[in-house]
Amino acid sequence: MDEDERQTRQELMILDALMQAMDRRDEVFQIIEDSEDVDEARRRVGQLLGVGELPSRAVLDLQARRLTRDQRQALASRVEELRSKLPDAR
Image 1: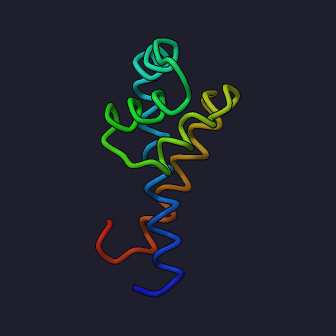
Image 2: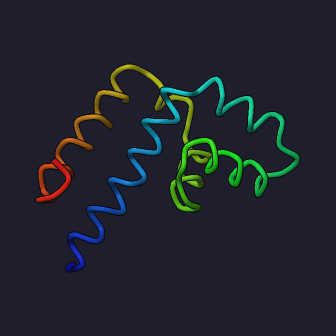
């Protein structure tokens, strides 16, 4: 795997986690609210979404303005663009 493909896969992994978090925002927010600290929240969000530390960090760093319909559509479009670059992710 070359560097471009690795970066594309990493960005896709993060964006997929963000899309999942948006779909499950009530659960994500409840986990964050119930967590003792950021590390616990990151771990629990990762468990909920089935993702690792980097995507979990991205979810915790998600700004509320990204939850609007137009921002969600922009994320979905970017996901499709990235998937089209990968031969096995279509």
